[in-house]
Length: 348
Image (cartoon, rainbow, N blue to C red; front, side, top):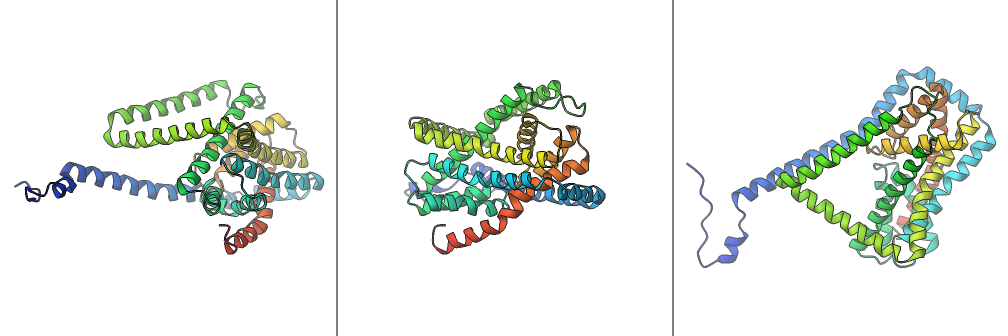
């Protein structure tokens, strides 16, 4: 016997309209179940990469020891230069955040927010930690929550766009060290692009055919349209556009320059163009795995890229350890102190 919907008095039209239909209840339940599964998958992905990296380090301890010894014998002047270049990313991040908003922000707290975001970025998946700090900072400086979310989204969109654009230029310029037979050639790159295009086409088709995916697609396209409108508004102001796009392009370039300084300190025969291409490709690949601060995913991608460029595993690991030393471990203590001070004084 089929269950009957609850009876509503004929005169109370508003109550009848408020009651959901059985089909809507089933759809909402299915959507909540899907969101629950996604919430379960993301933490697993975030933890998997660091755990796998730790297991590899334990199993390859002789390689780790050789990498540490190689790093200990690196040129100290170039290591200091790498540390200095790495800290310039805070200034680039401040410029990028200022370009994403329409009102001037206080300079010192703005720069301090970038420093504080470093330690937060190593606790949450890459990009989310510094994004949360930026969101809180903008909200504390008089921006509404929608305005703050739009600014942080515009910041992230500009960073992703410039990263892909620079990577495409580097690949087109032939800076990838293709003399190594272990590196993928043009056929592999074309195949990867075909796979990405197929995934996008499948997502579009699902958005047209499946009701739940159609609603998700509508929200996604609405968000993209909002970011496009924000970019159009920013481009009308040359100063804001220069800060936003210049800062977005400078951040990964400074990271790549840091890696090049480490490579130079280890006396590796890799040119600037090759190191920049390897870094951009590895960081783009590691973004697919949302591990905290890119731990595990970025380390594995960089190590594999340097090994593919013809270097030994110990030397490749030494370069990655040096890069992590100057970009993560050395700034960790000052970043945590700045974060605590900003929270205590009400800036965050």
